[in-house]
Image (tube, rainbow, N blue to C red):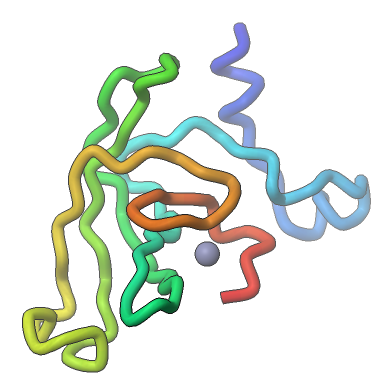
Length: 108
Ligand SMILES: [Zn+2]
């Protein structure tokens, strides 16, 4: 089953030894930590986020709901709580506004 294969996890050390790229995406699922991207004042910002729901799993319309950990008021006065809810977020390997990607290999 493709799902079982793509959902396998290995340690970082195993990945180094076997030269498996960390950019291999697993399926998004509830509780996984990802990066959420958004543009602000012309800059592309990456913030950690937890997947709280997956929509349309395994289809081209797959999206996730995220609880995003913001950099407090450094990201704007509306983020004093450090928490933001972002909905219907699509995956994009190339970071762009209102998308998510795996943190592995991301330099941010
Ligand atoms: Zn990132």
